[in-house]
Picture 1: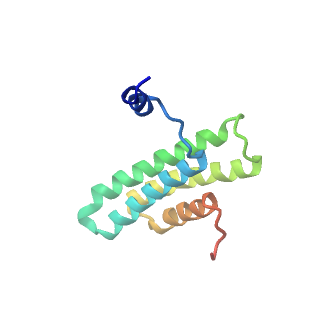
Picture 2 (picture 1 turned 135 degrees about the horizontal axis):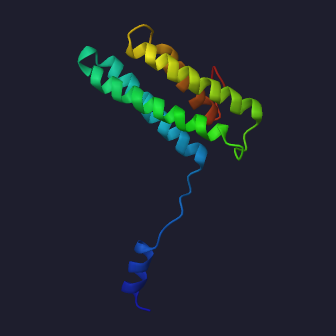
Picture 3 (picture 1 turned 90 degrees about the vertical axis):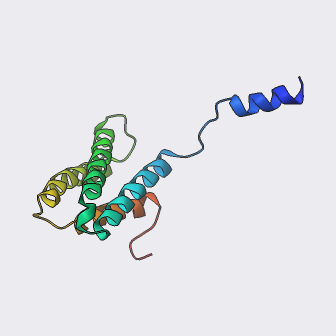
Length: 125
């Protein structure tokens, strides 16, 4: 087999991702949290961006709730219940934020706490 064929095969063969589910969850949550913060800091003109970011945050939390509700989920039952509760909170609180009846900070705090957990950090570190 010549070098050209070997090189071509090396670049066309599917590769297996080395990222863990935990790393993927961290990345998704970090991105959406950054988008929420960025839109909020940009002021009233960025409200449509904020709405999109909050919508994506809701979708992410819905996916997390579905995942922890599965009987195949390997997390401890208590942790699964806590994540499910947080997903419910995010859904309800987001509606209040969009109706301008609540502050954005609690949503950012929940996401930050989960990011710390996914990143293996303890509060105060």
